[in-house]
Length: 67
Image 1 (cartoon, rainbow, N blue to C red):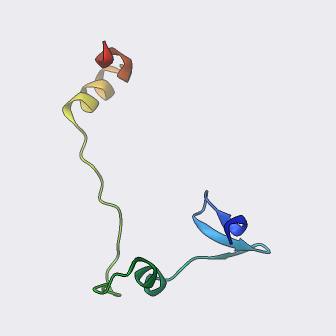
Image 2: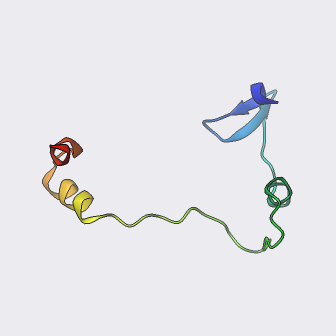
């Protein structure tokens, strides 16, 4: 099965057909009992820290903070 896994698309590819596990299959694999099927699950974005905001505004890289 590992040779069919496409990490770029995070799915299995068989003869140009993409297959991804359903929410029910993920819940069974991860042993999660309280999955709500009508809910969208997304990764929560992390807020930008002050240091990252400052670097973005000034165009600096992260190397100056390591000194």
